[in-house]
Image 1 (spheres, rainbow, N blue to C red):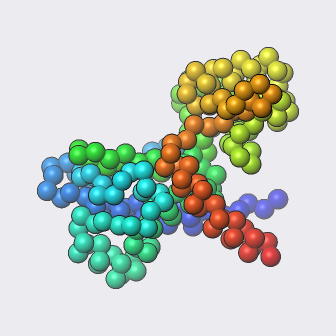
Image 2: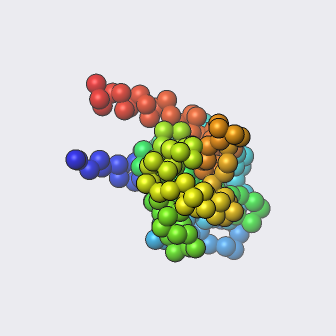
Image 3: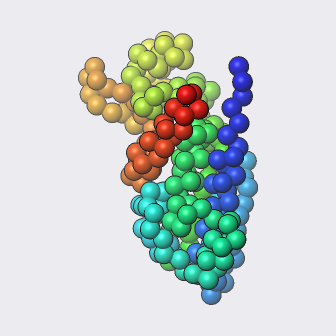
Length: 216
């Protein structure tokens, strides 16, 4: 087996996050700009509310810069992707690396962007989650649609129905897994925000085209 090097996508994501922070910060506020590398994720924070809706950050190609001169400077230096496409690149990095999806929040106090460098299951390390629950999370995340039936989970993690049932109930109580459908059609998946679902739908065609191109 060969290790697939996808570090390039993460480098682009971090570069775009840093540029986004520098170009859109409100420099008249007292709070500083911060870029912090934690064990499982990177977090970028800056004063100032985003000028585009948070819901469209990972999908839109529309940009509205708070500091147009700084933005233009980075573009002319060739340090930024096409205007308005930084959010797409950040989300795409999570897809190609199979990491937990990025998260962004913005209000009048400031903007915070979190870029994970681990998958969804490992992002809960250090929290109250058992190894059995972690194995179930990994199975769901690695499935084609990130949804699995009870039977499929049992077969993947090699656990009894009783143990899987108990772990799923714990995961749903913690809000990390959701139940989809009813009866025999019931499946279990990962909770995702509306903007993450939209970004996934938009990014997948590009991922598929590149995959087919490499295999061809």
